[in-house]
Length: 143
Image (tube, rainbow, N blue to C red; front, side, top):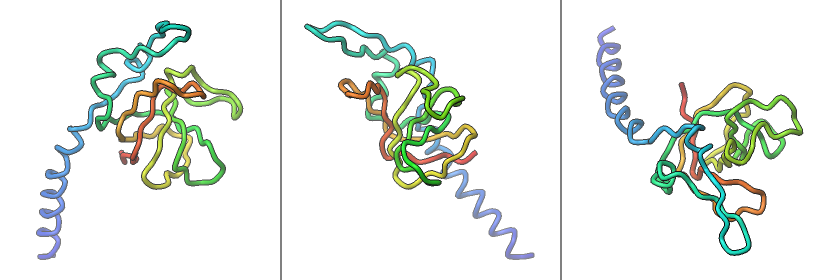
């Protein structure tokens, strides 16, 4: 019993030290991502990102959504995160402003429930697949 109290105290100190690090990651909303527009530049259209989102480029952000795997298997290192769950295995649940490509540091277990990921935000300006957002070096945040 005399070892339990110091162990619990140590865990509480460790948790308090780690808590501010979570606060450093800006929470990103799907509403903010959905404010992207298209502007014509010469002979093509390019995305025009809202100032709120552009200010977060290359910064650590967190976002909650639903996993859409891009490969078979229980663990996914690269997948799409969607604002809404998919109702069809062959259909995209939203437009490009409602999808974020996630490149994880390590494999993430595929689940149907919403997940929260944290990673460095990249604004994609020229993607042949039409993606607008990417999170690199992403990790899942446990609830």
